[in-house]
Image (tube, rainbow, N blue to C red; front, side):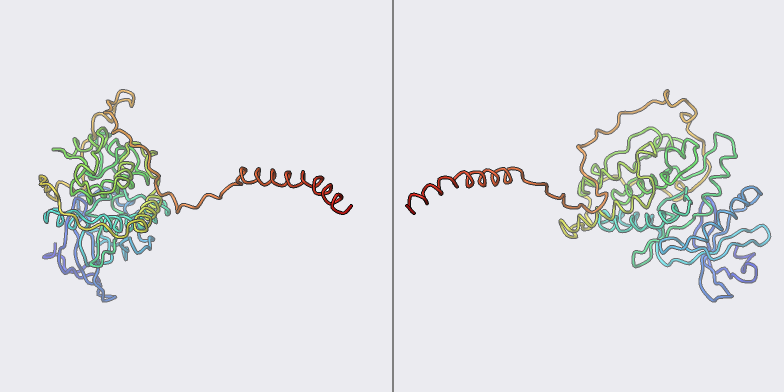
Length: 382
């Protein structure tokens, strides 16, 4: 690409290719008009041959360009030169969350719980803002979460994922678009994604940050999607016993098969995690170091190509009736521990009827002595 095209529309000079995925290649470029460094995501030509997709892509990209939030990558421009369609975004100097997880795993340690909470809350802030604008990401994964060198989160790739998700609904019923490692059960079944689908993806990301593992492993994208549909995820504590049990409960709720059993939006999840973090710090202080793994676990380094977004076959079970779908027993539910819905308020104390009754008895007794005092006074006065 760089050899045949150095500048787009006479404005964006390509400086170097910095990444590639199933949907697009990403370039570092210079905006010659404004003199700033930007990132340009160039759609693969295979996606631009469908006119219907391009219409949806333009619509979703314009909607994403209206998202102004510190935890969302800003879209500066949308353009086309000949058959090349591209999005111009802010350039984020940092790392992907996937790189951060992989580096910690290679060092034989877990990410500190406090850092996991901070990063996840920022993800929830950005995604929650999009949910309030009626936008669903549809393809949330650590590769789409950028982290600056001072740990500020920037979520990327809103427009493309949504447009392709809609396009896949016009294909054969056996085709599903998504990243199997992070796809929600309803998306794996070919249903329309909702904000709760993004919440499920956040649950998978939290699981991976806290353990260095994905909740499910499989040999093919279809088999992976089938596990999201059917299998109960393991407890985080099986991999990382240092994680607080209540946080394990929260992640387990995020990975519920039914969307209605999860938190409904990322904003709601962000408030839950913020309250949990604040209460934990108030109770114990910052006690979450970067823990070294206490036992050797097999490192399952998954090549990036295996975690790209692409079309794959929908699991056959999705086409059967829900009553015929085999179910595995759910993980036993622990006695419910109160989740921090909001800051707890002291319960106002009601009247103490015991004290009131004793007071009334004392008053009656004093009144009963009045005739005796009168007789004593008459005898003394006479």
